[in-house]
Image (cartoon, rainbow, N blue to C red; front, side, top):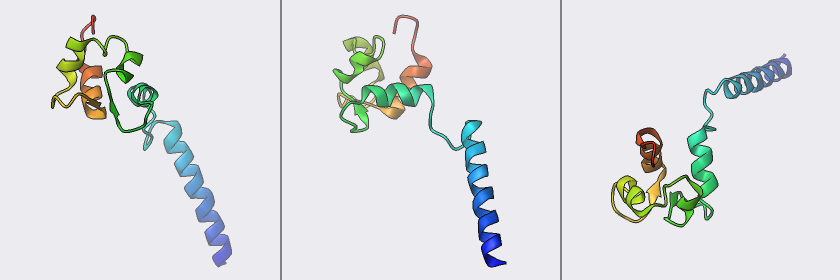
Length: 91
């Protein structure tokens, strides 16, 4: 009986996880994440101005400085979300 319960639990857990991922629940696979991590070639969790060249116009010094909110010379993922949500048509 215990083995049956564990097998049933495993099947339900896998089904639930697959369903949630398929509908976009607990998943972090978004366009913004894909763009950010695609540009972050050294995987340090931030974009240098050189890495920002992979993102449309983000490597422009004025645009980069506008969204580098703390002025450290890097765009973090939160700063990138800010860019992605607030950017103008020429940014």
